[in-house]
Image 1: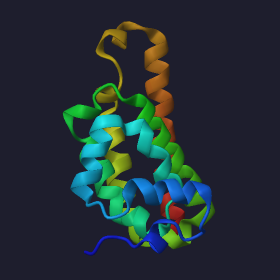
Image 2: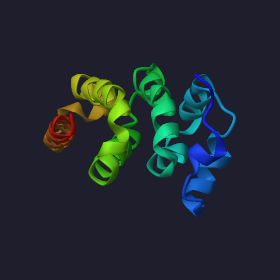
Image 3: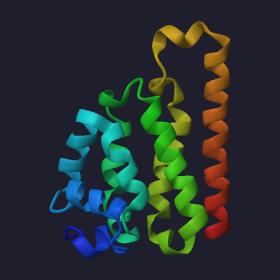
Length: 150
C-alpha cells in the first residue's frame, strides 16, 4: 500500500489538516508507531482531522502502539482516540466503511485490556474502577454505532 498523499492527509486544506500533513506526510506506519511511542498525545489530534484515506492507512500505527508496552498507563491517548472514533463515525461514518474492521480491532483490544492503560498503583481506588467502567461503556457504544454502519 502506498503512502497517503498530501491531499489525502489534508483534503480540506485547513489548519488542523496542515498539522496532520506536517506530522504524517511521507511517513510509514512504522515511523508513525515510533512517533506515538515518543509522544502519543502530540499526534492523537492529527487522527481527528486527516482525510479518511490517510486515517485508514495510519490506523495500524494506533493498534501497534496501544498493543505495545509503551502504551502502559496512557489512558489519555486511549480516551482521545475513542473520542476521535466517536466523532468520526458520527460525522463521516459512510466514508470510513473500509476502516471499520481496524477500528473494531482497536476498540475490542482496548475493551479487553483496560487495566493496561491505568496506573497500577491506582487499582485499589474505587474511582479508578468507575473510570474503567466508563471506558468500557464508551467502547461498547462505539462498537454498537459501528454495527449501524455495516
